[in-house]
Length: 107
Image (cartoon, rainbow, N blue to C red; front, side, top):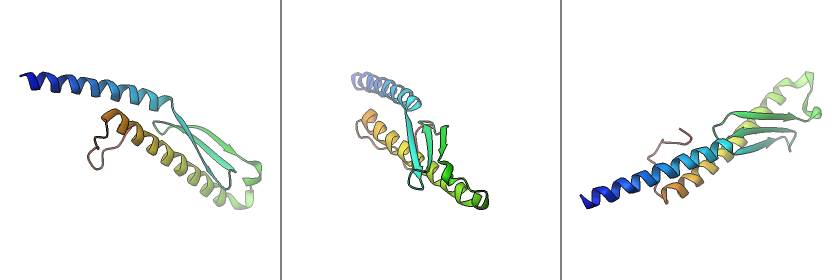
């Protein structure tokens, strides 16, 4: 019984750390860039787009496809930064305990 009580306490502490981490993720923003900074996309920790900045030089009516590609690339860059940040915070919250394969944050 003593081990069970200790395990329950550890689980509660981990849950508290996870809640803190998720709150921090929600307030965190990361910006991805493409085209040498001509397109910038800012996402919050949940992956919601908060801002999109496009340098006027990147806007060409004759080449809309290039601008579309730059937006997608900037979004991918920002998403990668958010995922790396979330993974680091998860390692901190779990004391290095690895998540099962395929399980990602934020949930």
